[in-house]
Length: 561
Image (cartoon, rainbow, N blue to C red; front, side):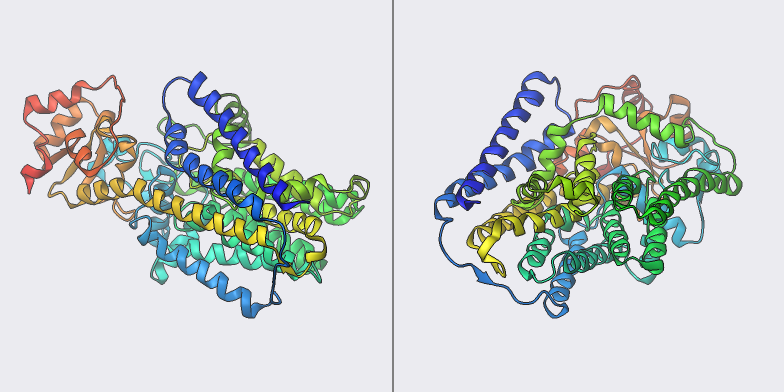
């Protein structure tokens, strides 16, 4: 394929996607949601950088023999993996100020703290029982919720973070997962591209330059674990034999417990279909049994364990059984299917040529051979298409995090696409690929800086809240955009000051708090100087703020220092 046409086609495709996104979400939509904010601040300018770069570079794409690549052995690949892992570890402080932005991440940290302390839930001190929901407003497990704070998510991601916490730093968990995923990707690429070191390097460079992979690994999100364990599972599956299949089965069960059990089956089921096309009945039956077992373990046995350890469900959340999970996914497809916003994030936060090369691999697939089970491109493509088609609104995420576990497959498809178009340039990286890599790095640097700048005000507010000389800090969620996410413990362990959501209290509870404790209120006047964006939230308990002024409770933080 003519690289000039490839660049112009990529630029044109991205431009059409952006136009469609603006028409649908900004012309016909009403209101401004988180997706609008992140698209305008991060995705749109990053994609604009890419489009302009592709159009400027397109006329200079022809000619040149390319750069020869060294053998993709451990001597060259492992140092790059180590550097990527080191950047992910350092980025937790350098980029994210040591702060976990979203409620999803905070809950993972919260669970890691009590698992580190040898508990399956944090007992609620008696003095705070009446305020337990104001202290942990959402994402709590219903089991034993009248007496314990327990994360709603499954425990494996938090357990891994707890283990690294005991070793010195929970942020090492993301770096370790990233390294496992990259090494697994390398081993798979060596197996799939024998005699094509250039295709191996294309696969690895697509992953190593992905802003989504690197930045997400700086956070407590479970998605880096899904990326790692999906690729480890595939590496073991391709290894074959008793050890390979049993190892893959164990990895699948562990992966299903990272945070939600339905993610690994999206990866596994297309490959079971591939095994069936190959008439490998025993292997297909084994892995189908693994899928059934992981559902039993995490959707049945784990809740039964929590029921035994913590007590019956309490408060308002229902239990999340298999039917609830499936029903929830169907409901979300009805109200929260946003492919334009979410896939814009996937495009912006990943390498320029990742999707075009993957599409070339899919388009050039020989279907007759694929239907005989001879082309691994088929299950890879099916997994990527399903993962992207389920483009549910995700809230926060650096890139499209619900597609995070399939980025490794996109990179492998990119390697196949590269083989298809490289022709006589086998063994070399051509000028177009190198220019696209430079564009990718530029966009990734821009997005990393934007992530840093977005999180900074919330990190400052979190630090100020926990530095307050008070027994209780009440956060008015109307004081700033997503300020309710600041209602959290310090380093996952509740203590003084105890932080609460003002709008989840009533006047009687405020009276008791103000009569017994030193109370400080954080509202718009505190959040705005720290750079937290203003909120337009209305609330039916908005009068509580005026009531606190009326009774003289909750002096401003400045007055308390």
